[in-house]
Amino acid sequence: MKLMKKKTARLVPVMLALMTACSPPPTMYFSAAQDTAVMAELETEFSQSASGGIRLSLCEDRARSDAWNEPGACGEAHVVRGGGRGIEHEEKEPSGIGCGGCPFSVLAYVTATIDGGPFAEPVSLAGEVRMGDLYRPSEVFAYPYTLELARCKEQGCDVRVHGLLYADGRLELEVRRGDFSLLTTARLQAGPAAVCAAR
Image (tube, rainbow, N blue to C red; front, side, top):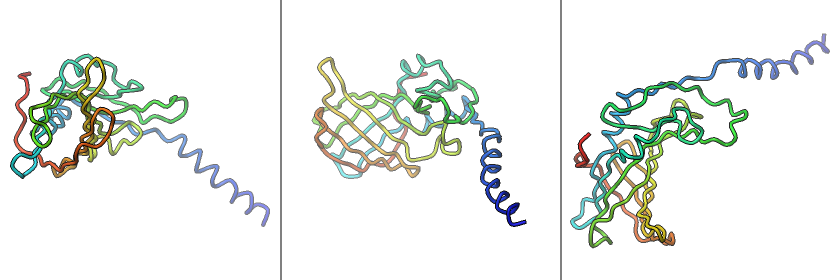
């Protein structure tokens, strides 16, 4: 009897592991309506309350967004596109076996204009807003979002902006020079919709 109890105790973790492995992975559904809502939140003017403070205006980078057409791809599993242009598809949570380190990112390609603060004139930036990935099905569009923007030319990037966007519209920024030395930090708040190109 004791031997049977010991064998049963050893088998329980194995059985639980098999049940977990055999259960179907969660499915994520991406829709054009969802994309439109998310992009409407992103295309915003963020600013500091103080006069002369930093302002940042975000818009979709439609050229890069429209060039993406690989739903579920290893790098960009889903790219948010506004104005009803989103690609509708569903994806399973990756098993982690044989994925080869794929990030399966969910993101938006954006352009931005930053001015005020240390900038004597507006600076045009480009980059992306990273939201989540397929490994976290319940958090694909969960805040905070991560902004990675830069002004880059042939000789390299001379302005880099890293930010965290929170659900309450707060945007925490770090602005760095091309050599990654810190230029300034700022806390901005969401304001009116940004003036972006017509869809």
